[in-house]
Image 1 (cartoon, rainbow, N blue to C red):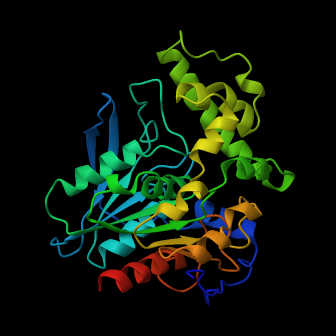
Image 2 (tube, rainbow, N blue to C red):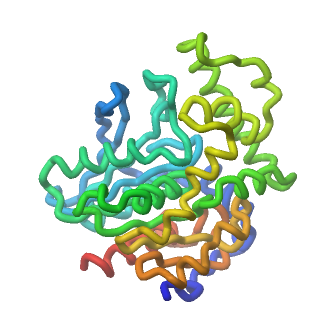
Length: 326
């Protein structure tokens, strides 16, 4: 049984509210101070991925963490920077990757990114390990990046490099269909508007690049994920429709196949996650999936006070990895 006890994390008032936890870091958190080095790497299909390297303070790390951001995020959002800052001070080198089209420049191909992309994560991991410096690697994913991380580890475990020995994820919409419906609720309308604005902008750019493949008719009227994924995400990435995309890419179905210790942290007050995104039965039957359900945290929140701009999620990832590698 790897369903962990409820952690002792208790945020200050008013952050016992899931929406406050979700909104505050984006709006008010101070940007963690790091010194990222941008590198562009080629993908096997002729495209590119932009990654940011963050080096350990001592410059001699043999441990690598690869951090994946969430929907409409990028490598220089506050939450990947916070994780990179925390881990580099503790002896890790860190790569924060940008999903295709999220680094400030459109990628070259019609495809961009979606919740089930794992080939790009594999490309980044193998690129980092090819330096020959690292004996241990960990994968860290937030929200959509967490779904990609868990799917990657479970869909073809034998493909994962042997150096990858752990994973930590936060706020994972591991049931994509149910999560998409949950975000349609009135109390989530602010988030949905934000996500859809960014996705519409990306499709408009793609339509200019590939007018013969992408039709913008009806785009402005799309206010939720399902019609957008039906018309754009699914056909551009080889799925029949939104339902096929959600079914194929939800990480829940792959969790039982994960072979390395993986910590999955899902706050009970996360406004994005339905009940099906708390896979208690799978964790109870697993020897590798560690499910932790703190009472508070919102969606990629986990705020704590008076700790030098360090969030609880960063400390939790660090302690889990420390227990594994010493």
